[in-house]
Structure formats: structure tokens, C-alpha cells
Length: 493
Image (cartoon, rainbow, N blue to C red; front, side, top):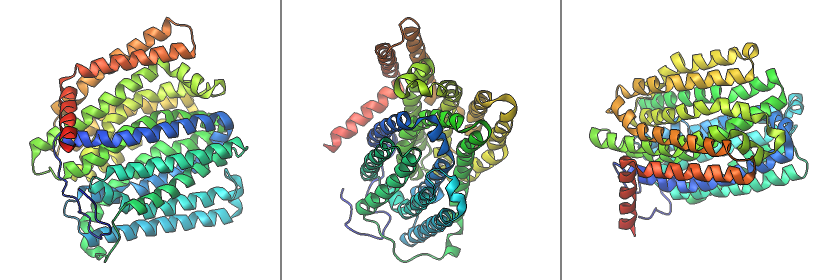
């Protein structure tokens, strides 16, 4: 199938995959996402070694703003376009106008901050807020074109744009850090990524805005987008503003360790949950009137996510100290206890990611919003409030406990209005949980009986990888997904 050269339509692909094809598309999208991950991880390691924890922590406040821009680029409007099978071209054009206006407004606010004396107290001086302005403007312009590409399952184009942006921005960041730019390297990386991504998406997407639908005719759609956006804003507030909180209470160096630990957890999550969500939301949205096929597709997606991420996180639990020391150097040793305290949350966040997919694809984002507002987020805020009393590491561990404790209840609360039941959750994550346990035990056993060195770390990691592979091969569900993927690839040749 080929895309039109230019169109205002939102459905130009005759693509209606169903069932485990969702998992197959997610894996293909994951290939480009993991390539981007390799680039970003390399840049993170090099820049961290060059600038150190203090400079990394100094950029904490502005890095929070960067993650907020991602809410605009892939927030409620994006998921509305992916979910709503009846979306009209005029509605998409109005959503584009909203995203652009929001991006320009927030960009203008950052320009005002950059022109004020307060800018001199931020990382990068006056240039920091101007870099943030560029990030928000680009996020607004690229949000809907990206969403339309995803709606039509043009994930290769999105992946190409993201890899290009990652390569350019990583090169710029390393160059700035190597020349003594300090925290400015991280800001240059954020602005460079946003600019290249926006330009690439605009070049690769055939979609262009046309006549706009009046807002009064889009009330139901805007309510869905608002609920989805509110959920993501709450997630952003809890997972990002904490960095500023840590910097204020515990100092810039502690904030640097905290940010680094958080990135080690979130980067792998993004590489798996991101591409799976991209393929799953539009596909599942088209299967709402076919409950059994919906269940099959959703369980396959959650099974693949947990089978990929949980063994990796279990390995990190066993090898946290040598991983950090080998990758970042002894100056980053303060990251280890925080990384270990965050890792339990990583397991729960895999289920939480599945919950978000289910809510968006089923049109029940309002239920997830209520759960977040009334249960999950207040408990996390309480954990942060205890930080000055219990200390940083205990605070982080408390947030992990809350994340794990609320993951399954939150899933069941959202799933109540969908075809998914608790048995589907158990079937999706049962085998990956056992594989993760065996993988972590293998890595820990080898690490305990070998002298610390790069070779020992590699041996332990490789053994854990083999264990994870064997465990996955023993899972009938994963074997079935792999066979379906290979059959689909063969039919496409």
C-alpha cells in the first residue's frame, strides 16, 4: 500500500489488522524504537560522564518542561485521532489548529521567561527558555501529523523521523558537553530533537490540514481528548515535578542522581510501551464491536510488553551497581540506591501502560482519570510529602510500593467496562513473571561468584539474556505470537 502524495483525509490506508497482528505491528515498530534507544542511551552515558551529577541536576527544572512538551505532542489529541474510527478530516484539521495554538502560546510564555531576569537563574541562562520555546512550538506543529501517520499504521515513517532526530540531537549534545557547555548540552539535545522530528514528520506525512470543523460539533471528542490529556498531565506531574522537588530539598547532585536513575527506568519502558501503544490503540479501537478479537489482541500486546521488559528489569535488580559503575563511572555511584528503589515501580508501570492502552482504545479514559485523581496520584503525592522526613531513598521506595500496589486494582477498575477480565491479565503476565524471576536469579548468581569487572558484567548479562530467551521459548503464548508474526512477514514478501 502506498500513501497519497498530499491529502486532507485521515484514512488513506486500507489497513484493518486485527488480533495478534497488533503484536506483530508493535514488534516492527519496536525495531526502530530500540535503534533510537541505543542512540539515546549512548548519548546519555557520554554526556553524563562529561558534565557530572551537579550539572545534570542543574538542568532538572528545564528537563521537566521537556517532558511536558511530550504530553502536547503525544497527548489526548493524538490518542483521539488513533482511537476514533469515525474521525472526519475537518475534525482532524481543528485538532491540528488547537495543538498549534497551544504550542505557540506555551512557546510565547517561554520567550517571556527568557527575556526576564529570572532566566539568568536557570540552566543555560537566557538560552534555556528560548530552547524550551522551540520545543513547545515544534511539539504543537508535529502532534497531529504524527497521529495521522500512526492512525494509518505508517510506523516506519514515524520511526525514521525519530531515529533521525535522535542521531542529530545526540551529536549536538555530545559536542556541546565536550566543549564545556555543561547543562546546556541537555537543552540543546531537547531542542535539536524537537526541531528535526517536526521537520521530518512534516516531510514524511502526506496529511495537510483542510477546512476545520466547528468546536461546538466536537464536544464528545474533546471530552475524550481532555480526559486522556488529564491522565497524562497527572502522570507527568508525579513523574517529572519530583525532579524539581528533589533538587530543592536534597541539592543539585542528588537531583542528578535521581534524574539518571529515572532515565534508566523510563527509557526501556518507552521503547516497548511506545511502539506497542501506537499500533494497539488504533487497531483495538476498530475491534470494539468484536469482543473476542479485542481480547486476543490486547492480551498479546500486554504479554509481549511484560515478556520483554520484566526480565530486563529483573537483570537490572541483580546488576544495578556494576551497570552504573561500568557505564557512567564511579562519580555516579549515588545513582545505584535510587535506581534499585525505582526498579519495583518499573514492573508495575508495565501493567499501568497496558491500562492506558485499554482505556484509550475502549473509550473509557474518564474511568482512568477518576482512578488517577482519586487514588493513585494522591498516594504518590503523599509519598513525596514524606520525603523531608524519611529521606530521598525511602521516599523513592515508597513511591515504588504505591505504584506496584495500585497497578492491578487500577487495571481492573478500567477493565470493568471492557471485554478484558482478571484471567486475561493473569494469562498475559504469568509466564513473563516466572521468566523474570529465573533471569534475575541467574544474573545474581553469576555476579556473586565472579570478581567485579567488565567481563563479569557481560557474562552475567549474557547469561540472563539466554535465560530470558529460553523462558520465552517455553511460553506457548509467546511462541504463538512469534509464529503469527513470521507468517505475516512471509505473506508480505
